[in-house]
Length: 315
Image 1 (cartoon, helix red, strand yellow):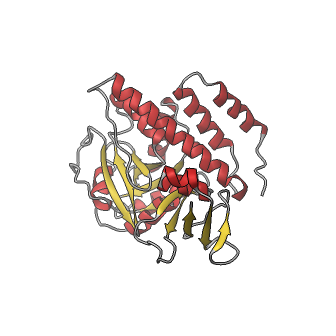
Image 2 (tube, rainbow, N blue to C red; image 1 turned 90 degrees about the vertical axis):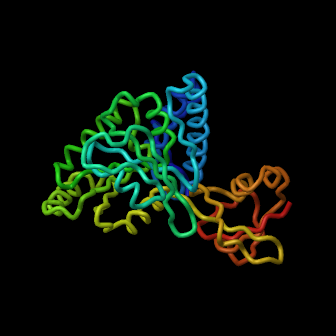
């Protein structure tokens, strides 16, 4: 399927090539991701842009920590992807982090409990996803490191309190992201309506859905009561837009415990590079079970993989 990219995409691509620094490159990539239509024909290109985004974001983060030693915060990326919780004070981000990960943040009913970024690992089936809680988005003192973290994150999780005008909360978060020059449409965004156990939560969620359902995926939960959390885990995984690929050695069974996690649209070559650079350099061909025309089909480096594929690499 052809990509059918609009003229605006090529203008953004030109801006990327002419970018004078890493921040300008990231901004151009965000524009390219936002402009690019979402269909199977753009999956491979989208995967490549995400790899560039991740690489440039790591460069930017490293430069900041080295240049401002002791003043910034660097969250080491772990797991299959990174999602950042953001919202206004007292929406329940810390309680949510505690409910779905192994992190133990301070949880209190007063604002600005979270003062620094707090990462935790969320399990989903056979993978781990990193969830990072940050100070309220309106706390501008955290801007220097916050911009880097938000740019490098795979998903933005906007958490709102369903008991207190959630429409205004989402609008405020989007305005703050705009001030930080973060383009939400260039990323996976999930709006989480927390405190769904409150009396007025259902009515407020309906209003929230009517306004933003066409723009962002939405889900209602109660971190306090533990309701909706399994569905939330699934939504976060789907928002990552990744695939899980399993490896096997010749004559052996596949390893289903530790999948290779790749961006959707990735190829056999991408999988080989992720496993080991020697595989990437010496790879001759691969056998594939799943996305091939038949099980054990011999495929080239350019073969696009699908979720659940099993690959046997030959060097």
